[in-house]
Image (cartoon, rainbow, N blue to C red; front, side, top):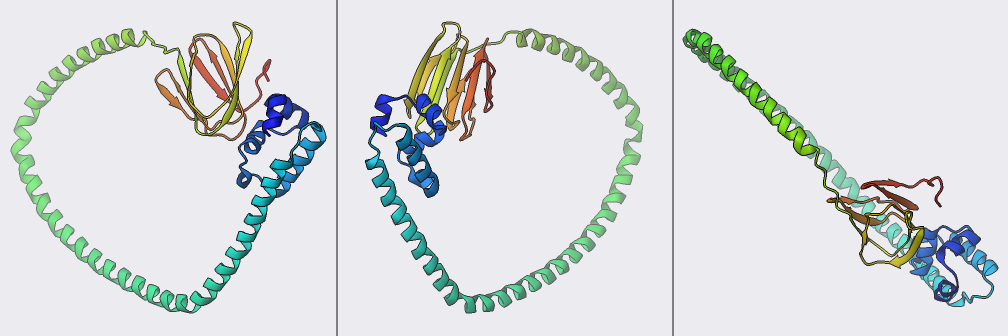
Length: 264
């Protein structure tokens, strides 16, 4: 794949083969565990047919070795599981009956304690009711004075609340926008930046954080959304394996997996 990338860009490879940049990146980093064996053979056949000037023998050899080992380990794992199930089948039956017995005993103890608790709460409720009735009789004479005091207090609080709301509205009109955008890849990612005001573009293939000046209007196309974006005091995590598109305009950020009109 190194020889292929030296001659062609990822976008051109994806366009000529109809293989998404996501799968191309998996082939680049040789993540065969993320690619089905049949899909890999299909991708390799397409690449060989479209780029006859590139030697893919090394990639094919590494993939064949991986899938051979993976297939062998799957067979061995299945045999071990079957043997373990046969050994433990008898013991599970005994454990099951003991487990059921424990559940039945637990349910009986729960209901016994629950009934005792209900009786105790009923007795306490009767005592509390008598105490409350006496307290109400003593406090009836103070109700009128307390209501008058609370009404005056409420009017003062309304005035303070109105003044606070006015101050909040004035402060909220000032909006701070941080023009720095930090792209932190969670894994190797390809992305291309289109500077719309300057009619320029720049392409990256990296796994290290990159900081950009986002004061200009720009469009960013990611090969996948497994990245963290730090912008204007917020951390945004698209969390998508699909192609992700980001639009920055007048301090606002919009993220989508769908194709954007007038863009790729």
